[in-house]
Length: 260
Image (cartoon, rainbow, N blue to C red; front, side):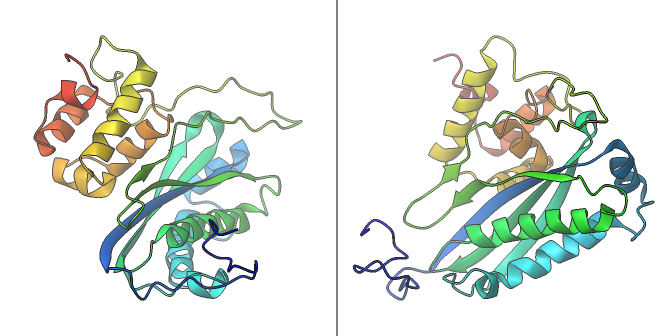
């Protein structure tokens, strides 16, 4: 039990004492994926849902929830959030919406729970907004994508296979990677896609690159990095890879451990 920081030597729950920890910049991103019926997905995308703008409501709900994380999760510390952003990635091939929440703080403990709470409540809000159309909508996953800062260092989630929603009124479709705007090809030709993705993940970790900051410096959407890291997209467009490499003062080959 000594390895579980939220339990004392007697097994009782406790709030961890972080008073001796250093104040450091911390960041975390989390995702939630909700799979809808074709009718509900169309309503979300064209703004015709009975309750109004689904994604706008979900974004505000996620931001509000992140601020209240310490009130919702018993042993969480209250944190001064310096940034909370929520992005939505429609996955039209399977009528799904991927919600990516990013939280930042400078504090003595991590901000993972705030990002996870934001993604969770945003997904629940999407459900609430479309339940009149689709009571069978499925929140299929909620997970941490990345974190940085603190004693434990950086974390980047491994690739996760995509799950198809099976319904009685719709045949199950074979999963296929989502193609994002401007994505035309996998990483530069000549390598194994899975090995490229793992090398890219290691490149980020070794250089302590935060997806949101790196993407901003490169002038590309952070969602493209997240989609590639988690296997939702099959690769990065050549121009995106080149911009990221330039921002990291590296070669494209370095990001994918090529030419060594």
